[in-house]
Image 1 (tube, rainbow, N blue to C red):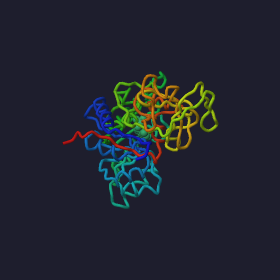
Image 2: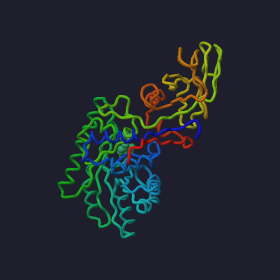
Image 3: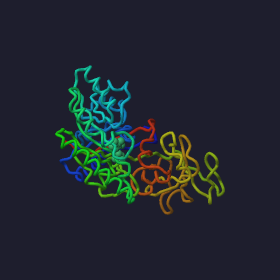
Image 4: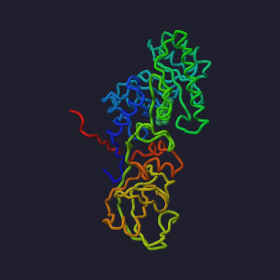
Length: 383
Ligand SMILES: *Cc1c(COP(=O)(O)O)cnc(C)c1O
């Protein structure tokens, strides 16, 4: 095990899922968004724990290959494909029992043709675009598509869904937009149901909507970022308490004194205002420690926060430990001490780092590189 690791706390993950269940009601189904390898956390260990504890029903993925990997790992639950498969990937959604979102007649017919070739009946979900403008049919087309699916002898309508672009926002116009989307979705779904069609599982809510719009819960919710313990936005409604799952950590490899006026790292962009101690951390942008944190990232060492000095390099960066090499009156910081890059709450949280980078926690989690080992922690709670 090297110095730089992503420590993944499965207990915190399960805690977050329980809070979500409490929020939406135990009778509702949950589809955890585990695309992008579980937002960089490693999907399989989390999916396994969630299924063992009966805290999820579906796994949501973004590429067919992500589903293939989960099936090869032994995942037996339903897997929902949130995006549209390339034609050459359609056989895999059959071979690996992946349930796709569909959005138009030509794609639906491609899946129907493959099902017919295999003499199979394939379950699909119908995605309605109520304002995200990414994938989905127009609300006016939804009834005829639902009819087509139900009448096909090779297709089953497993569910109907939509997605929200601004459910995490507390701006007035965004709240009006989401409220309108929910009403439009409900009306479209009711229209389908009133035509005597079995619409399957109705689902819409992402993390933002779970926090803010109970009327969007329908039969199932699709939480992503909140299962990993970050809110979808710094301003998001924090109606449920969640715990960060990932701690991105390293260990100091080198410490040296720098004289007042001394400069450090590529570009020599940082200069010491006084004699100070500088620590070297063996992590860099190749590990996913974002280069925008140059000269401003916050790192937690021994319960105190220190600031990045100079540019983040590919594999290392520097931290200013101050003139006492740590906190005045405490033992000086030494080589081997732990440094938390993102994790926890407050200044060293992923949200704070994301704000400093001008991005969102989603991107920082997903950028933790493959070379960083994921280490899973779980208390022995089971008999
Ligand atoms: C990623 C995704 C989600 C989860 O979004 P969060 O904001 O992380 O909760 C839900 N539904 C769809 C279709 C998605 O692509």
